[in-house]
Amino acid sequence: MHRWLIGLLRIVDIRLLYAFSYVFVVPPSMLFRPGYGFIYRYFRQRFSEGPLKACWHTYLNHCLFSQAVIDKFAMYAGKKFDIRIEGYEYFLRLAKKPEGFVQLSSHVGNYEIAGYTLVAEDKRFNALVYFGEKETVMANRNRMFSQTNIRMIPIRQDMSHLFELDAALSTGETVSIPADRIWGSPKYLTATLLGAEAHFPMGPFSVATIRGLEVVTVHVMKTSTRGYTIYVTPLAYDHEAPRRQQMQQLLDAYVAELERIVRMYPTQWYNYFEFWT
Amino acid sequence: MTRQEIEEKVRNFLIEDLEIDEDKIFADAKLKEDMGIDSLDFVDIVVIVEKNFGFKIKPEEMQGVTTLSQFCDYIEGKVG
Image 1 (cartoon, rainbow over the protein chains, first blue to last red):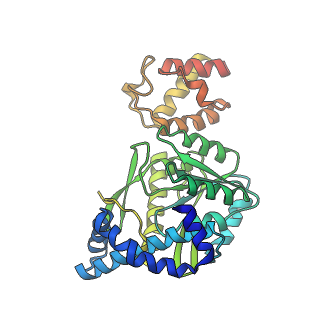
Image 2 (tube, rainbow over the protein chains, first blue to last red):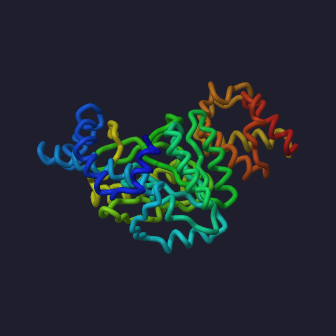
């Protein structure tokens, strides 16, 4: 299926596949998958939308998610996108420092696009990825990343990926960690996002603060058929504060930036589960 | 560094950095079951030990270390 899709994307216009998915993929997936209810409630409760508007935005959300998936395969097929980066100077400044730094990502927009764009020549880039993705996806990613200084670290249930991350940071490399889903360790921190409390994994904030590293958020948002904007935003925390406070300050800064992005692009929220407590 | 100094330093970082209750810290306490240390805490421990004792723990060397006393033995073996 994936090989077939990549082959198809080499010869057809990407918009044809978008249109196909709006009609034949999105409606069935909305009807038969539980994600529909979570996203509908997200628009109703977090944005106070009426039922009809929430339904429409839920449909748009699914369409944009299908675009994000198609775009990923389009990149494997060699298609190019127009990418604008906000905060690139800051990213390059961090990349030139000898110390490592942490990039926190979220399940909004299309983060993988950043992996091909936001790369520093001077610093190795380590990205945490979920194990269990289809072999074709991993193989294509490996093929594309082999031309760059990017390494993927799969998230494992025994948390051994954290040691790989820490080892990378201790030698001045950069790591990218999704910070909005709890995996492996049950430890969490709490913050208010869009007016309601939610739990966030402690791991990313712990890994960053234990070494007193600089942290940025990286969000890659779709702005047009072939356009993406990457937002790189530095996060501040008091490096002298007690550890628990450092983690909470960092989380609060991360959540504030996530909320800013989500309010700008509410239909590109892709956490298809009950996010809020 | 003496054994006593090692135990004191370990005790301090367990309380201050990992927020473990003082009454859970005793020689035979099991790191996982009694003190609730998980892999996430262990990453912290690797960094803290590096800062306090000047060597890097290798996760594979910690295979047989299950109690606080054994953990202090391990550090003593490296720096004592």
